[in-house]
Image (cartoon, rainbow, N blue to C red; front, side, top):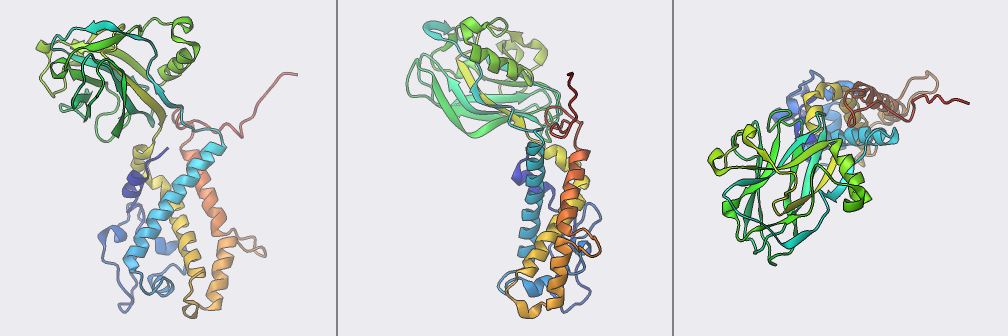
Length: 381
């Protein structure tokens, strides 16, 4: 549902830290720790979360800024993990389709494709949906001769240059070879690297090929459960809910090598796979959408940092620096006060995450639908 590295980077300055007014207390100098996108400061989420208390609680060998960076990063991931788990408990998010070959079929060894200096491959259009991501993690190629570092290009209609290029090499002529990519190809409807929507093209230039490609007996428009197998049809129909795929080519006169061509010149060939197949996993990755709407997360992340810092202080082995009064106050504020019915930070944190779930529900199906588990079901009797 989210990319950990992107989330940590995108939320690093969601809230900030305020330096102590006491100049004898170690000062924070790192700009990313002092910056606050939301206008909120972690110090304000609890009276004991001040720099002096933190310095007196962490190990003497631990650098203050290192501790604050590590604590914020860990707390951010905790919030997103809890949010993801909550969505799964509500039965509203999952991997839509695990890694599976794009299509079945047989390639006869004498069913070759003549090289005509075209760019050949597949046009892919993703469902108009925030978060839906098609990841190609395995690439299959089948040619009459072995290939050495055959460039496979990935284009998007909003970018002049390829958004990614991978190389494919084989050792056995004529045989289908499945290659595990060192860097998976990720196609997203919503991305910060290219325009929202648009079309993707994955393919190669025939002039780069040694020998000829083998063509599978498969038609991308007309296939049936009897000829392709019921399982293949079921997977294909599931995939069609999220992405449309069609083989295509661009004549040599209509492209410049290594540049995006005019997509209107694409000629579609539904009965040709150009010696290629690939395995796709379709899932939700909402990292960039969450980052764009990061302010919604500021309160929950602030509370999570507060809970984690207070727990660190409570369990600090530098007990001589922490009075028993403060320790009891931390326990009460984390767990709540039964006498006054005051909610503890742990519970208010859970409520904050549930509020985020409400903010991000009914926005986009299938990645951000309404919760199902607690819905009302009406049946006739």
